[in-house]
Image (cartoon, rainbow, N blue to C red; front, top):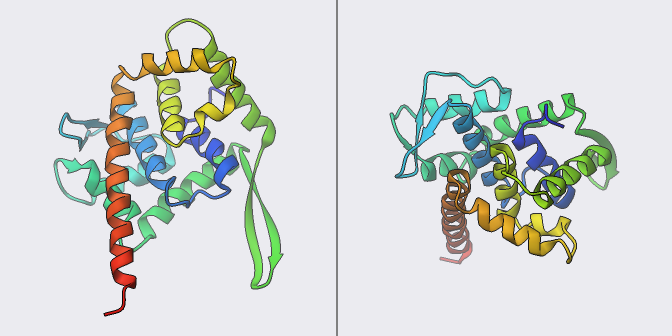
Length: 223
C-alpha cells in the first residue's frame, strides 16, 4: 500500500463511512490533506499565521496539481487557509471542488481503490461508489500495526492518523483493549508539526461550517 497517497487512503476510509466524497463535513479535510501532502513534498509552505505560500516546485500528483493551480489563481503571495477553504468548499459555486474531487476519484479508480455501479431509482439511474474491501482492510491493518508497535511514526502516517482522528473515525478501528495504546500514540503525535496544522485547520473548518449554517438559517427565514 506504500504506492498510495495519504489523501487516497483517507478518502477510502471515509467512503466506508460516508458513501460519498462530497459530504459537507468531509470535503474540507480532503482539501487540507492535499495541502499538507504538498507541504511534505515542498510544493508549498504553511506559515505560522496559517497562510499558504506556493513554491516553484510543481506537484506530481494530479489532484494536487489542480489544487495548486486553484490557489495560484488567487494571485496572492500568501493565501490564508480560511480563504482557500471558503473559496473551494463554501463558495456559491461548487465548480472548483468538483474539479479537484473528480480528479481524486479518477486516481482512486486507476489505483483500483474504488469502482462504480449503476443503480436504478425513481428518478432514473444513479452512480454509486463502491470501495475495494480488501484494500480498505489492508489500510486499516497498516494503521493498527504501526500504532500498536513501538517506534517513531512516519510523517505520512501522522497525517493520516490526524485526519482520521479529526473526523472521528480512528477510534472505530481499535478494540477496547488497544485503545490505551492508541491514546498514548495520539498524545505523541499531538506534538508534531503536521498534527498542529491539522488542529488549526480543524478549528478553521468548524468556524466556517458554523458561519455557513448561520447563513443558511438566515436565508430560509421569511422576510
